[in-house]
Image (cartoon, rainbow, N blue to C red):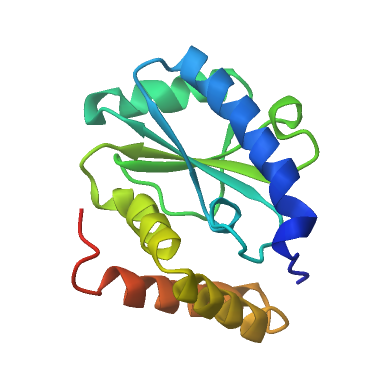
Amino acid sequence: MRLLAAADYQPAVQALFERCAAALQALLPDAQVEHVGASSLPGACSKGDLDICVLVAPEAHPQVVARLCAQGFEIKADTLRTPELCMLLAPPDWAQGQDLALQIVARGSSFEDFLRFRDALRREPALVAAYDAVKRAHADQGEDAYRAAKARFIESVLARPGDCL
């Protein structure tokens, strides 16, 4: 897998996030729309994709997923799906040629870890460098090994004292 340097993808992904965030906020006025994933971390290497976390009231979660599916988003296959989390892939008119995924998250759930992880790395640039090193070390070992190594790193960051909400 090819990892891109921040300068090669972040400006375009940030512009796409801003456009999508405005459209999502108009569509879902009660939602909190957050840029997450490597593209939300200044200086991070990435596959160049965009991940957006959409936080909604727990009772609104199923309706929000249905509303976005009616807009052309598709439930991402082979991902964890619970009453508090649903991963969606964006339709082409939203994605504009990029890989764009939404994580629909119930407020107050453990899946707010997307934000905790992002915020921890934003606070400590050394963690971004360590995360990049993990990704680079496993980028050519296949998708499963890459994801497993990233998951171990993410878990280690989230387990640190002081990184609680």
